[in-house]
Picture 1: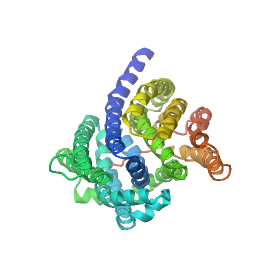
Picture 2 (picture 1 turned 120 degrees about the vertical axis):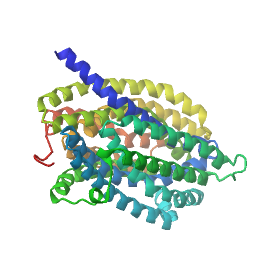
Picture 3 (picture 1 turned 180 degrees about the vertical axis):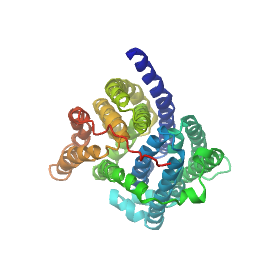
Picture 4 (picture 1 turned 30 degrees about the vertical axis):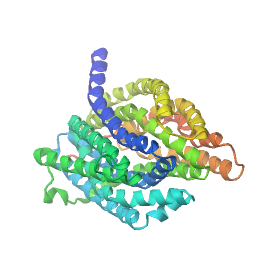
Length: 452
């Protein structure tokens, strides 16, 4: 019986994780293709766009916290087969995300140069990044809302549709980048700005496709009544989860922005090498992200059905999932590393930094697997979103970032020493996960009885 249950667990996880991992991979390829084509242009272009994209990254942290919190509740209500409540939570997510996206659009469109000056003092990077940011800001209006619908597809068992959307957008992005960045045929050579225009096209296509899909699916269709439905009880349920997710997302995300700030003051070579390393990391972590997202949906639906014993058994098996994911990540860094090294046009010093950063990332990505599977997948499935915020606060903001700042601006440590110190937070967090897991705070049904 145990073996049969284990087979069922693996089958369910793979059915969710594989499409989600592939979608993450395709989304990463969008960023990778931009970085690749810009990397063949100039080193300043890839460094400037990397810094400019920190703005959209910060926006995604706010939007992702809302979507993640609402997604936890939608998964549990979907497992309970209360589809009307699931749609109402989707409408709530869309309202919040649309407001957040509009604020970031106004900032990026109105004061792009001032935003760029936060990350770098170099005039050329500010000029290139500012022009790019002003154009790409229009994509902000589409991206957040489409992510709400993509979340609904994954939870409702339509992960393959979100995969198709990602596949098409990757093709469109790569094609548009090729023509607009380099000026092929009748198109002018727009450089970094060409990448911004292609991003707008990609996000618009994704949103239109999501709206068409939603209209055809009764269980996910948005009408005026559902979109603007308001319930104090539902709002209260969401806001029990959002603060923890937002705190962890901002703590982690702002630490990434702080990384960009520190590296931006270490020179263009360090910034460019870190940008390329980030591309490799995004490609490699797709599988782990798919496993954590799939695990969160699985456990959420079990908890919504009040199958707590089964959810507890599944939770134990995720320790093996995290281990194998970490080992595969090490193998992938060995495979992807040489590819990114030869594909990008970097200065000799930047290439040396790149090799050293990739070597360190073997340990980093192993630790990342455990942290992601549990703090992003297992724990939030039952509304336990505070632990991630606490662990990020202590490991990142009380240890890694202060030490890196002192090393950079006071003691003037070598670039690689500063970089490794900045990234030690993922490794430091691993020993504390098991202790929190054994408290079973995450083993909770969050749905309301009689909600239908």
